[in-house]
Each structure stands twice: as C-alpha cells, then as structure tokens.
Image (cartoon, rainbow, N blue to C red):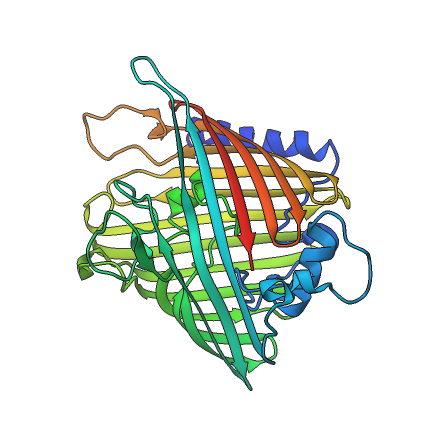
Length: 402
C-alpha cells in the first residue's frame, strides 16, 4: 500500500488534471494528439518522436503550429529546410535547432537575484533511408555548463571542458523489418514516459530520461501497428560517459494504446544497474521506475498530458514523481500552459534520516507558460517556475529550427 504522502501527491496531480479538464482542451504541440496525430512517426522520421521532421511534419508545423498561413495545399518554401534555400535529396531529411535562454533567478535572504543568458542548444541533425535501412544522428556544441550535469552525458570530447564542448545526443542505424516494426542500434532516447521538451521537469530528472543528455547506447525494437505503439530497448550503457563503472545496463520499455483518435493511455518501465551510480556514488546500484501516462486532446483547443511514476533508486526507499500539463491554444500559434508537478525521490535508507520534502515526503511545483509560434521555424517560450524549497525562476527561450 502507498504511504500517505504518496497518496496525497497522486491526489494532487489528479485534482489538477480534473480542474484543467473541466476547463476545455489543451494542445500538446509536440505530439499533435488534439488534431488526431497520435503517432510520432506521422511528423518525425523517428517513430518514437524526435527532432528530424518528415515532409508531412513540415507541413503540419506550418499549418497547425505557426501563426498565419495561407491554407494552400502545398507548403510554402519558408517551411522547408533552410527556409527552402536547399532542397533535400529524396529519402533524406535534414534539420537543426538553436535555442537561446534568458534566465532570471530570484534572490533569497543574503543572495541577490541574477540574470543569465546563454545558448542552450546548437544542434544539426538528419536521417536517411535506403530501402529498408535507415540511419540518423545529431551533432552539436554546448556552452555554459560549468558545475552542471546537463549535456555532460552527451559530450564527445573526453576532457571536462569549461567552454564549448562537442556533443552528439543520438545516432543510430536501423532496419525496417516490416512497415510497422523497426530495429535500431545506437545512442537513443530512452522510451520512458511522455516526450516533453521541459528536460528539467522533475519527472524527467528523477527518472533520468530527458532528451538533453540522458540517451543511452543500446538496441531497440519499435512497433507502431494499429492502435498500439510499443518500444523495448536493451540498454548497453552510455559509451560517452567514462569510466565504465558509471554506465548503466538494463531494460527500458513503454506501451501505449490509442483508445480514440485523441486519447492515448500508456504504461512505462525502467530497470538498470551500474557498478557505481554516477550521481549518488552508490555501489552496485540498481534503480527502477514504473509509471502510467495519459495524452488526451479533449477539444480542438485544449489537451492534457499526465504522467505518474514510482521510483526506487539504490540507497533509497520507494518514491514517486509526476506531472499534469494543460495547454489551451488561445489562437493558432499562441498557447497558455499550466503544469503541476510533484517529487519524492524516496527516503534515504539510513537510520538517522528523517523525511523532508522531496525525500520521504512529496514536494510540489508549478509552471506557468506562454508558448508562441510566431513564424514558421520560430518559437518564443516564456516560463515562470515556482517550486517548494526553491527560489522563483523566470525563463525566456527563443527557438529557431531549420
């Protein structure tokens, strides 16, 4: 039976979901489920979702995401790679992303607030298909990482680096065994939970499944037939992380059932082991997480994403994390989002430790977001993040994608 704090945390997330559902319908723009596009492979060359867009994905980006548009059947040149300046060869898809962050961290007693600005992402990526074979990958640089674990797991250069570093977040080769079954080998996004862009959301940090640097090398099998989408990955370790004792091995998988064109229900699970946990330094560390997901496009304007996960990290008792996110599209291209999240990493297994918020008891946070796709290829996102036992953060993020 769940401990009472976990029950309260789950009830808090459920309450937020009920409140938002009683309001209308949100738009999970990355998955487009409110428009009936439930499968990531409709818009992305990677059937589990990702950055590289298919030709249809570029059309959807222009006519379903960005403001304006003329409603013609053919996409305008501005929606194509490099704004139409370079034609992609047949069976080749190219792309890239540049994200620039302006971050304000509120002050606390004795500590003044501060502003920072830095490039958060500068990546090029692409994929190609030759008959049943497919190849894909990304290459980028990162800066502003002193003292931060972000992107470290994706870096290529061995030295720690205190300026720009070279990185690759994913790269793979694959074989389509049949039209709905793909086998891949390489560095892949872990098939766990809902693929959200907020990589610092507690659900992604606590399960270590974000798209920033938590990819792992391994072998995956992806099925996308009928109402089902399933993905199983045999994790062999992140070979861009050294030394080997920090590398995790295990299994990660998810399955999702499309109950209606705009309602998807899923389960997800992770089990890994390492000789030494890279973050906690626990020896022979085993960690696992099991969760459930919901993606619902309630109307053409409002959709809901929700996820709840139960955790067990080495050296800790069972914990939990999760979020519920509602997105209301005021007009096409302008989204207001409200996200509630909860985290309890689990009480440390030591006799002298008492529960505190976030460790043995849940703590809560809220995100207030304005997301504006003001032109094809251009997005401006504003976030306010308020979390218990932390100062307020305000973020402005400009995203240019090729």
